[in-house]
Image (cartoon, rainbow, N blue to C red; front, side, top):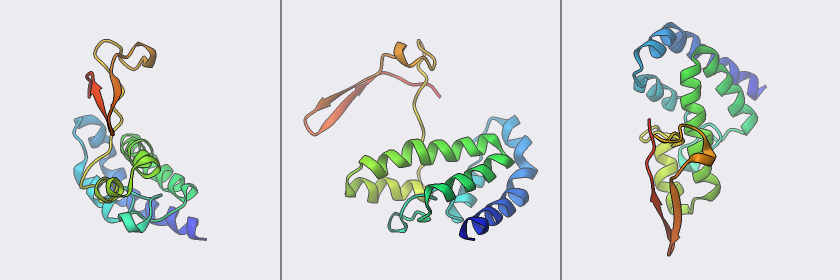
Length: 150
């Protein structure tokens, strides 16, 4: 029943706010910051993360249902949410220490910050074995050398 309510709530938002703008979002190549802010207000930018970090506290099945509805309205906006949540937020949640979660995961869940996935390189595109960016341990941290596009 809870998952049906999640689908209905997200579907109503998507039908009202996303579908009418989907073509514009795709055609303008501009980041839809206003839509992301509205989704954050509904808890959609941090669906699977605990409420203590300003997440919605949903399970991953519910997150998938919400993401499916967002993607139904706009594939581009769905990709924003998926990369933001699954690639950036999930790494912080699974591997970040408490201070990192409080600072960075909370900022992601409220969309104060937007998560991304830095994949493409000038000489390699998205060919992972051909990439030259490195991360080497340096004491308690890492030194990252290289460059990404987009």
